[in-house]
Image 1 (cartoon, helix red, strand yellow):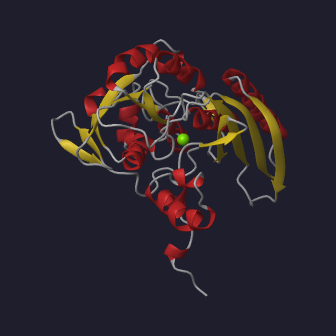
Image 2 (cartoon, rainbow, N blue to C red):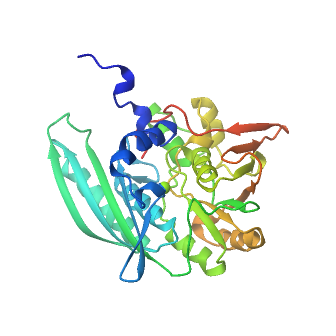
Length: 339
Ligand code: MG
């Protein structure tokens, strides 16, 4: 029997964009869906013994496994720490699972494990469960890592992709597209005058500071695969609001826009691994921004837009030249194995 292309998994299905969302809705949720999974949040919130917990899992397949600013090990810790953090839960414990290709150098594995240890220490979390599988040469590419994480949420915190409100101020904690550009430049063998490195970082300390100055943070999400544009589309849909971004306010690290032009990429669709976008009550916007700027992972924070009542479920960009551009979810795959 021959299968049509649309009956098989394509790289697009792992992009984090439109095709990933369709796959989840058409294949996963009809069988596995429940009140928790259906929320499609960065982590699921549930209660045990009167405590609210946030729980998340993520797999890492990045190629190359070592890159400026991190490696697959630190990424696997930061990514899950950040997904738990995006619900306002300080992450506590992680599990880790390795799938390793036969022939993989033990020295590289040791380097990755050291990096995971340092990343966990940096984030103040402990890895408390693990598993290792080895597959035949060619059955996996070098090493894949899965992590899961859990944290406890304070009673009065309710942060969700469904909670963005008309009038909210939209804040990002720093420059856009650094991780995606770093990975692709390495693959293409490009180097730049100003070196670019991944922004991979744990965001729990920054978010703890934000929560200490405001109880009006409504929604947060980390714009990883699919980039800022896809993440904002998810929030616009889940909260049923319109989002208006101001292009001139978007922060970029020196060299990133130029590199994107050279590589034919749009930085708004590139993965970030140490970034969050927060939707906050307008009266607290400046206060939260100032608090973010005082943190090492928020130095380049900026207010980049507003939540509007028009065009619900959509994201618009006010361009530098005075026009308006619809920002859709990522369609197609710019960059497989970015994280
Ligand atoms: Mg996330």
